[in-house]
Image (cartoon, rainbow, N blue to C red; front, top):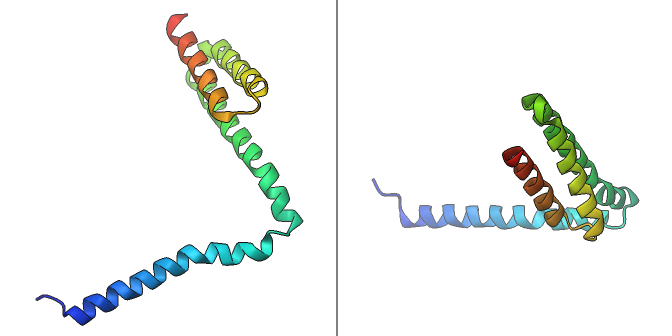
Length: 109
């Protein structure tokens, strides 16, 4: 039982319209919000807040899992912060440096 060509074309057309509408909807919704002070504040503070929450959860889990390596966690965190401030807030570089520091400390010491 093969579906008819008209049925298949209608299904593809409906799927295409829904996909395009779902991709365009965020732009239509965001246009009036661009001038909002609240959205601007969220855009400014949410990335830092999310990274802080992520860092706290990861540090807590790592300190619980490896209580004997607390010094490595603190040293890698300090390296991450220093590199982040020195390298003009480039997150990829600072995270890579902190991760490399932690891995080296855990494996070499």
